[in-house]
Image (cartoon, rainbow, N blue to C red; front, side):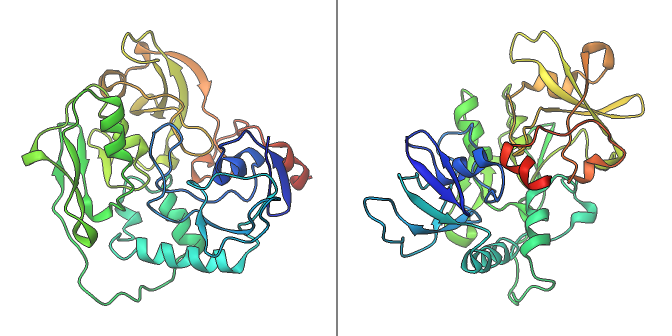
Length: 316
């Protein structure tokens, strides 16, 4: 198996593994990802925030790659050496990418339901500028209801294509996609056709920003005022394994369970997501694990995800 060194940490991975997945196996200095989703085929290569510098191509060809590469689409080669957070060039490029993403994405975090679990919010905090240098008119769209449970706010969309891949890979009939090209591209349905298939709600879970939101949860509460609990039920359509978001005794929303990379552990059906919001519908397993760095961890004392070996050494 090929060995790759990322920021001076070496790991052996199966052939065909991307740099991003290798970094995730190491567990530290992981490149951010806004469009890549390991459970969706063809994802990645669109947002460019995962750019890294390959200083050595391989043992057979040690020449560095001439340009920064997208770690989510570049496979490792034996002896490859990669610089992520230890490269000033990468950090500067990442700042530029975030600035471009924020050209048409308003920082309306105080009124956005995705606040507290938005990856772009984290990126803009780490790499964004305090003031935009963009002086031209920004794109603006009216909110669209694509079904009775999902609202699309294109002003916030960064065109990561995750939602279209969910529709293409999880549902029998895709009714929405990307229209036009270049800077006028937008996510839309065909002549305002409602998206009503059984797994359409997963578009909400995979959206990294607040472009697709759950209309049954909008403006009810901030996520850091809720308490996520793991639960399951015998569902004939999906796995039935979910996270229930409580405020007091009330279940405000139901989502799929997320791993430490923010990806769904298993996609769930709309019946579980929208129609089963009583505690009596579920078998409660216990508090959901929350990363201590997340704002959702406020007053939440459950142990977080198990740290990778390398991260444990660094934290000691």
